[in-house]
Image (tube, rainbow, N blue to C red; front, top):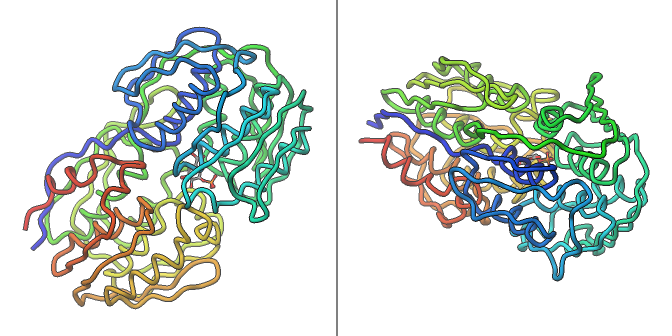
Length: 420
Ligand code: S3P
């Protein structure tokens, strides 16, 4: 029997944590950030901002940042190491382009393979010069100039592309509009609006008016729904019990996974709805449930993009078939998450098949066991750990340390809420 119990206060939202540091750095005055995610990815953004001349303190539960203003970034003295963090690379490229300085961005072997042309193109259309290696990844040399305003139609729904353009325009003091095929997470636009920037949204297009200043703001970072998802899935797959997750962000551009899990039959309850710094939060209670397969695709995908490896793992022990389509973006995340999830599911005895833009999983009740290869991908490690905690399963994760990118305390929290 796998019985779950207790409360997990998941760490701060990763997307909001990156943005809270960047916007605090660019503000005129002092911002206070409570509950920032203290993880490797956010540390990469903090280090990048320090390289650009901002005095970012050591990450802690309660930090204060003195902004340098929209024109205050300095030319970095050496390359900027973005580690494993795609958000750092793409958002910082926008900052550098808008600042008029030049910088070279590097990253680890996973990040160096990820597509950067999707941000280079709009930044070049604004007047910056970007040098990329033939594969289109890192190292990326960004040469800023006096940028012009832009109306960009992005072929991919990507909050990182949208944010790179908005931040470049913000720093350069020009107007920008970004249209996406589907609406990606909207933290950048919410946070800019909360700091006095004129933003408007029309369908899938977001517009930002030029400004000379950015107001500082004090924020409490909501709990990361992408981290809460692991514990909601763990509870739903358990033999008995319930887990409570207080203070989880419920921004609708992020909560697609919970809707999908509920459609699979999971018993989820939201209480204590509140608002923190323009973002909705609530307590999520998830209980042991009987799960069945579902189909997800199209406009469902952006709001659950980071949770699809987990959805696939849940599907492996749900009754019937689960089909994920319209998720080709998974191939360019920290790993090729379609190939890696399917090959790992097969390696532990599950019935899974790759599709060009997704996967098909036939669930069952047979025990799953074996070793999972994470390729250093944090979300794979946590998704398979949750699957491994299910009654009858025995799964070894090859690289446990990689969870430090988004959830350093994951293994401790997992141990605390599960008993046999
Ligand atoms: C993020 C956007 C998403 C997401 C990533 C974080 C962000 O990436 O997968 O984990 O904070 O903007 P894309 O912009 O590539 O979709």
